[in-house]
Image 1 (cartoon, rainbow, N blue to C red):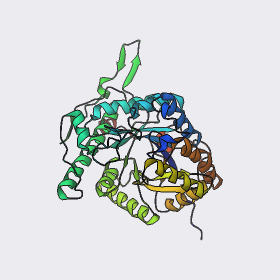
Image 2: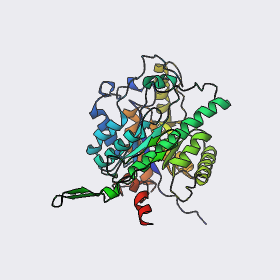
Image 3: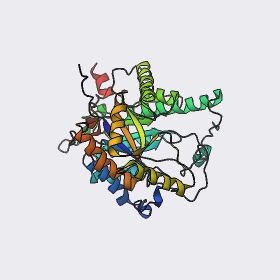
Image 4: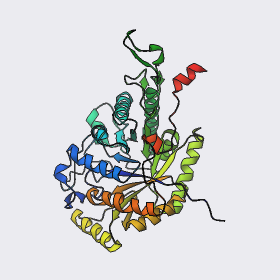
Length: 403
């Protein structure tokens, strides 16, 4: 008896400057002079939407990009500097109709109240297509930008003291996400009356204090922004190890992982599902996406030659936390379908060169998957939650009031 076909995988792309390879900006298609313009980002996201992708993520940080884990590298031969990811997403949102927009936001050193209203605003601007990728930082130089705290260097990881630092940062991030979610619920869906005849704009009884008291945050609420169109925008996070796997299981709607083979993918998925169960979330949907960095060309030798050329320009072979795939769209489709059998529900692809590999994803990989009846042929929903098969959640405070 043949097994039932797997559901279509979800596909996202991770946008980072001119691409994920550090020499990508030197490619003729890279457009480095346009990198800090709205048009550049609009072109990338509309290309992703042309390929019917579920969403894009946009990288961000609290310090210049660096090839070092903890410190600035002072390099001048690679892209340095970014635009704010949330603001990019808000600028691009009116130019798109279906694709989800998931900017990165750093939870360390920033305030959840500010981010809650920024992502709620993005959800309004995009009519229900917002999400956020929660990221933390352990870089001492980035802590120095804010001057409110110091973070002990963790270059001795996984020593017990380093694990304590990492655990604390992820606990802070989990509290941060909890505050976001409570603030998004702090206005009931029908809190706005807008009755000019009676002069009643809001029903104050349907705005709620969240009264969050934790070790890292004390937030009274309510938000200043009404409940977002999706109720709860999507929260996602990248995870590489046990502590971040716990964070994904505890706090995220989508987790990105970096396996290098099918067996490793299956093991990581099982770990995250166990953490999800331990957090009391077993009944809640949680997507697990695998990240892959991709060089896509018409044949494998061409892709390998392009990678080698970029490595030469960079002065060293490029390494990544994610598997680096070098080959054709058909070969990548084979790999995605193989890995999907390990329990993954989607994939986030990192274009090595945005101007080359993003169109290769949308114009070569997507049609290849469609030929295999393994990807959508049209958008089936107008919200990001809808695309991901996630229901719009009930408001926790309204539900509590009716009990």
